[in-house]
Length: 117
Image (cartoon, rainbow, N blue to C red; front, side):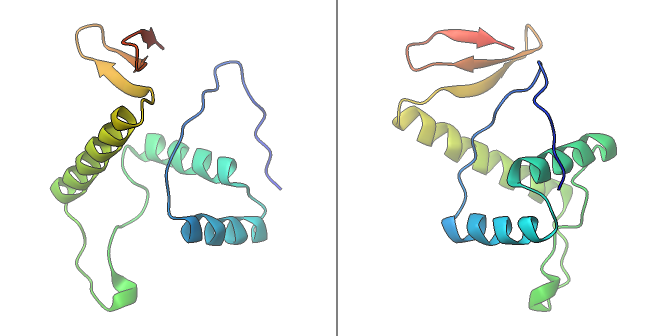
């Protein structure tokens, strides 16, 4: 089993996924000796190393070989981020944002307070 120790610089992320997807993924990951946190860390490290999503996004299992273009992936990601931002605002949850002027990420809390990271 892979174990990643918490480093001083570690942070957490919250992701909403379909319950069945999460349970099925946990079963597969457990079978190969990973937990969800380790698998997500592996994925994110590959994204950083390759400066891209480390696999082709397509629908081969359905017999469709169309691959998503970079523009389509960007559009879908932006749509998902907007949906998540809206959900967070509606439920008085903090949101992660980026300050272009300061070139820093920050968390904005429902009371308007900002915590730069």
